[in-house]
Image (cartoon, rainbow, N blue to C red; front, top):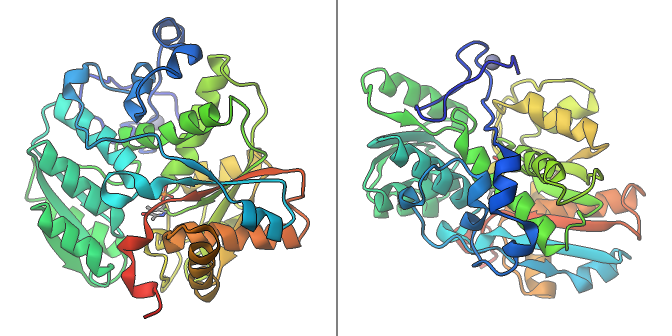
Length: 380
Ligand SMILES: *Cc1c(COP(=O)(O)O)cnc(C)c1O
Ligand SMILES: [Zn+2]
């Protein structure tokens, strides 16, 4: 935000001058010589194939659980019911640990390992803690996760199974972050991998943008609908689009970006409706879409900037509608997805109804985790 520069050879958190998020910058001209879009096709199906535009210096430091390119699945029946021509779901539920948090944490933990970190800490609404615990185990790091006490049981159990230290905190992710910061005062060796409090989870999530462009033959869709909590995926994809344009992999056309939140916690939607640059803290946040229970995103100013720039939208979905959409998609498309992902279908229905998304628009919905991680919302 302020233009101050920081070294990639040392551990970084946020900007030392202005306290905002740090964004990684690359020598794209140099990278272009190593990696061309034609050669991507023949490379293995993995997010690491974009290595020239990722922050690691040495590929020996990669910590991987097999981050395969996720499928872009056509939703033909859903498209027909909405009278749309082209509708896909990018299914991130097929990544290691069952959520797209694997992308960000594979990257952050690989880079942290490269820089000698032995111990990490993170506050999480659930899936980020699961992914941190798994990659930390793989990297032989100590992992301390701080979760709201009502986090879905599966998330708490997976962290414990991976051998993480689990701290349950009354309240939401903001309360968990407060508890972590308190505990961190006594532990100088903990490296904090909270959303956008270090620069590299964003770089992992950025690869969704690369993959999507490649899968659509370098033509981005007209509309992307994304379930937004901390906003890393949205900001990361937007960054990928800018880098790909600079590499001349794509043209200047951008999708309209749509943020979806739950009506039980919709700070970005409220700020968007009020045309504000930042969001206000959302009191008493409750929703079954636990990944969206973020009362105030650290980089809300970046999320909102992208929504305005892309002529996008922000839409809230009711929990009841979300749970129904989970079941609809399972029955009609054979996809058992997470409530956060199902919220994108609820939002799309509203946008079609309002005439904002039209028949000719190509649309991509993001499913961010596997439905198997949320057994409690499925009817018995
Ligand atoms: C974390 C999470 C989100 C929100 O992701 P951001 O990129 O932080 O906005 C959405 N869905 C699921 C399942 C999540 O775990
Ligand atoms: Zn700064």
